[in-house]
Length: 323
Image (cartoon, rainbow, N blue to C red; front, side, top):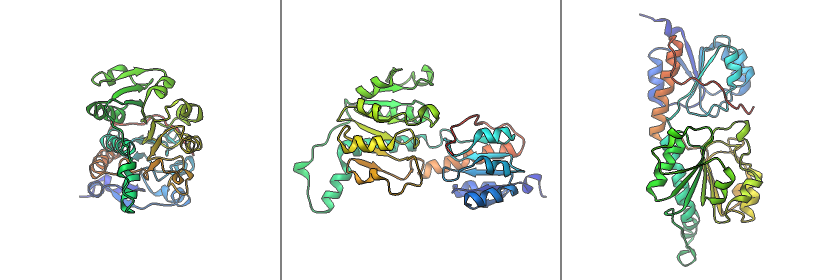
């Protein structure tokens, strides 16, 4: 017997775990297709729900054309690619999947830290070219070093827990997090970002992209860091001023950096990639088998609830929309 849900149409604009798609198809009509912005603006009129990751920008124009749209699901945490305010103004709910990729992003952050202090990419490339660099390579340890964590939400806490195991001293700047969120971690909390930058051997970013965090780390902030320090950003592009970072790395103002996110994505022809002291990946923090399974399960549950008239667990109320 056909249910009312079968009449509801869901557009999955960015890749979602196949098991999640299979579950959705049991109850709804599901279309998996990535449209260009202009195409999406036209096609969105046919759908009751839209599920995206970071590749699709859900602009005001797209939202305003969603005559039947009830919910926008972000398969992940950050919603800076969705005009949340425009959606809420139209009565369209926005839901996300917090915590689904926290472990994956934390592990990538740790991998970057280990690779940077071990010069791992550099020595790998040299070794493969038969330029055996043993006598020229002096690595450093994480043990005893100070990690400065900007932001201490779900991902930040996972990073700190791992850094504690490595014997690192952890310093946290997270003015919006209550103390109880970090009470089980071995950390020092500061409200002074300058102090964190001056003190830390590694600085890692785990905060949202909002107007107040746009270019949070720029020329002045980078100048406060130790010349032996490293910067890691697996949060959001736009939090680090990439021009200022390029100058700091090229001039040796800091020892190195690792980025998984960029101001403009997909990333192409970035001058930062000319430098040997930067490690880079193409926004793969959440790209693990486990994270994709988790995010799929969470987001389809949230979208399903909205379409069935049930209150979702993870409603988004605001965001910084950069387009």
